[in-house]
Image 1 (cartoon, one colour):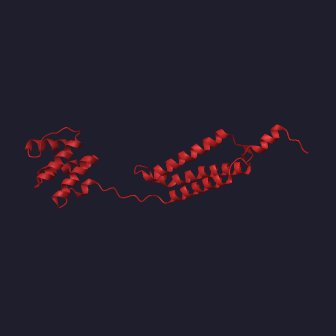
Image 2 (cartoon, helix red, strand yellow):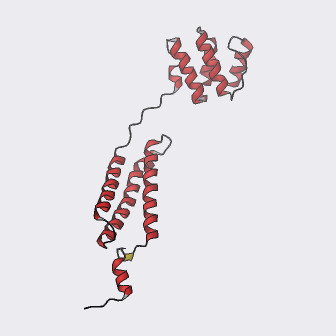
Length: 189
């Protein structure tokens, strides 16, 4: 019989990747990086304010961490310290998540409220003015000022309310007042 020293038995039992022993701390760090990269990849694809180049690169960043995680899992399975079934399920889920990231969500074009401010239907103009106010679309403020003389009272009221929202809640006067319309015009030229 061959008697092994305790250090040889420990070295044989500890998992290693490319000859480097993997400690439990590193497995937690690797797992944390995997989770963070998954979250970043999801955010990059779902958020509208992210650079498109970064959104395209995010799944590949996740793949790098998923590969590291997979290599680690296979190393500890080979060392007999982890269930093969669990490891292969985790690897399968990482691959599935990566494949889902390759199909980015379909982004609906953002329709600015100002597109419908000149619509023929007064109800559509009124709702569009309301949307402009809620979205804080300052670029449409001058159009709202011109809507203060709209033939429809509902449109005039919606334009006024939207202008008040765009003005930080400060009301410069009602739509029916000529001096107030002039003040709104001066505020939003």
